[in-house]
Image 1 (cartoon, rainbow, N blue to C red):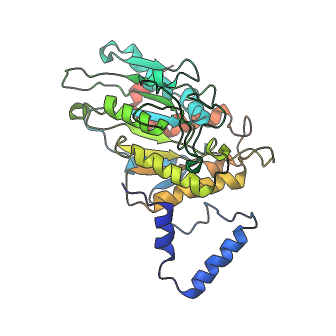
Image 2: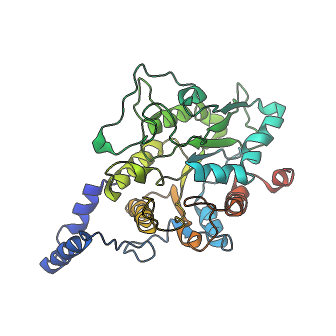
Image 3: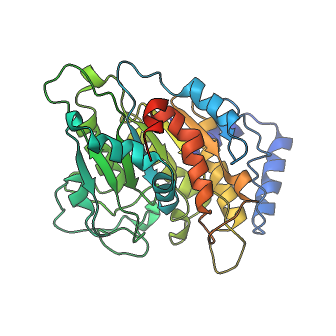
Length: 353
């Protein structure tokens, strides 16, 4: 899986162009300086149909078909799933049946011998992953445009985004379990320094290394690495002086960090904010720009192990709980109608209350 840098993308797109086209590019650059954003993910000039779909509570089929064609076929073992993101991802995981299926049900199966890791405090990040604490926390350099923003130290910016996942060791057995397992991992930014060790300075590198070391050590039995669902942007936009290009670079960093840890990556796009109040940095324009940035990255990649689910368009006309979060029935439908069919088998779903 190869993700071009923004500089590589720019040079590859602008080389050998006729002078007239270059003049047009310069004119567009001058136009953008007026702070008028013209990026529109529904009117882009790159093909996204091969890796993306649009989801809404009343339009699930296209995304079912996309994931059916792109998600890896499980071998003899059921898939393991990780949902990594901010409070919007946590609501998806906890409001739908995802937590019941990936955590509560496996815990009730004695033969799985699962251990639950549940974060108890916003500043107990290393502990939940079993990672040693770094002697001194250091922020990322300003030019990397990484989090955290609110908490200047090894703590979650999102106070209630508490990581919750299972480890279900296979031991010396030669066969895997009959049930899927997984969890939710708090990751509010595409790049941040909330979790640091002597080995890595970023949460993304430390989390990727941890799951690769613990979950992927028995691939001789389990065969498949986990499927990872990511989302980022609502917190990134709060980083001081961040640009869309900087966010794009950080998303590239995130994807590259996890490319060998996950069997497949599903990028779950952000929902649209409720309104464009000037007190919020998350505006319809700015978040739409972020969605277009992710699509640019994926359209430049030849990989077939990452898919994109667009929820932005449908959320524009749907009920919100607040500026960022949708109503619970949105997350319930998204989890149960789109992800649950792939997470486990119907007989197990029916057994969840």
